[in-house]
Length: 112
Image (cartoon, rainbow, N blue to C red; front, side, top):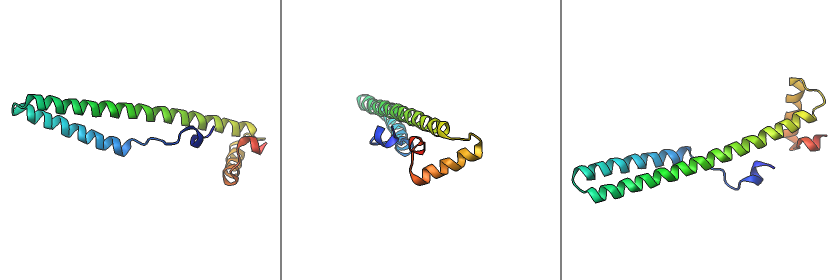
């Protein structure tokens, strides 16, 4: 099963995660300022918003980690299938045949 068939969308949380962390810090600091100036209810509301943002970020990171693990397992399985199909198992033959398979768009089963 290829990665394209397994997931329609692959999460990449590097840039969005960085932006979310910046907003979380801004919200925490804003809540601190509101708390210092005795707007306690508003401060708690802002802190709750920061906590919700952080929880969403953690959930998205967990989903991304799961996708990475599944795609890594698929790649390892495909690599094992390719190396099992090779007639000679020395490094040069493996590299050469893998390059040919990629260029032709073949799988290990089609190579046999």
